[in-house]
Image 1 (spheres, one colour):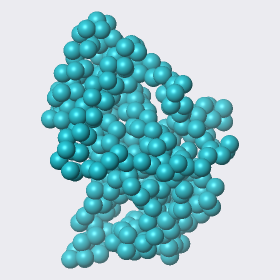
Image 2 (cartoon, helix red, strand yellow):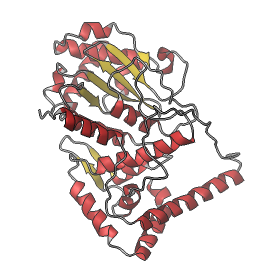
Image 3 (cartoon, one colour):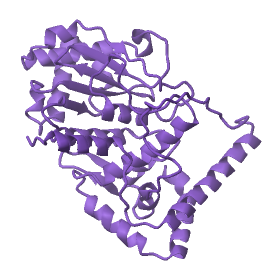
Image 4 (spheres, one colour):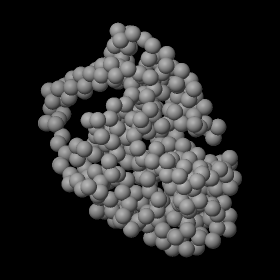
Length: 368
């Protein structure tokens, strides 16, 4: 395992928590006309919905309180960046791959497009992000906690089917873990892992379950602002997942298995949780994966403001950040192809770019 020093770790952490500052070579002109066609399309859709009586008025977010201690994810007015989400969809077929790893992760263009603002995120986008974070954990400093991220495929419906005997479900769960981690033999025992993350996809909603193996604790990280009890809100999924995972830990003779099995899951209180946002749970989940280090004391902040127009801007820009990081990740075997396509596209004339963008936005509804 490659371990970086504290300075490298700090630089790596800063890169993960900041908005990408590099340019892919496209002109500011392209960004402008891309936004123009997006705005025109959204306005037409909104006018049509108002005409049909589907919506009454523009949704307004309450203003949030700000303090000098708030972490700033981005400066909306000052930062100018290139938008890869707009150009790469014009250069590939919907089924063409834009992300591929030697671990078997694959992301098609159609799946990647769901990272566009106001769309419900495809699960494979989160899975790609989990693969990237696992790769980055291999370069962590000795002073930081070792985290492991399972993707959305680990938690499957049949694992919670009461018609299947618990012993059989444990065997199925063990088989899934071994298959998922077949190229990660060392983490498979979890003896060196501090935090294990499970991304749960339940009834069109994403949330995160963190299990602390060093200081036994189980945290549910959910962006929904709900007062319902955990057992009612998640239909027993966290509790059942604890039993299944602890059964696996006993098999690999992990010392925390017995302790963890007796821990009650808690839902973290986060002041950025939302009530009116239904499409961005996947982005919140990715942000929580990126920033949570097991501090359940209430001091942890992922850098987002309270539910507001400002928070929505932050979420929209995080979508762009994550797409950029995924496409240009060092583990993406198609990275050079993406860069080559970008450079080729940047050489086109403004008129050609204008026509391509217009055509792309017109066909966008059919692609998603």
